[in-house]
Image (cartoon, rainbow, N blue to C red):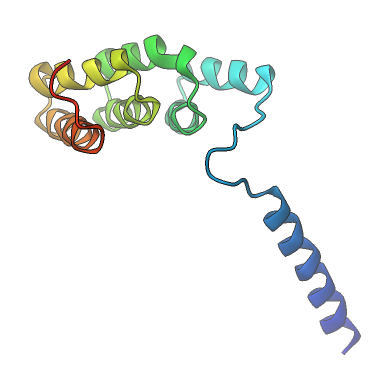
Length: 134
């Protein structure tokens, strides 16, 4: 019985910590420069998980300084999965340069799957933002 109360107490503390850490929509995240530098370095890793995880997080955190490295990853990486993750991150960034890169990849990438995904990201972006041309 004592273990149940302790477990319940710890669960309540954990839940309250998670709820208090959650951010409201539109609130700017307080991400340290070290975190961003680590993620940027992760893009150049030979470890597939680290590279794609870093790309994804840079998109989630909307780090616009990552547009050029993500474009390079989307254009040059050998793995189609890594190129798609880079495209997703570029879509999430939503800058004119990143959206244009998606448009170009949708037209010219060597891989059909990458072209299809980039096309989907691009079309989703323009339908949400009512963009008529780049």
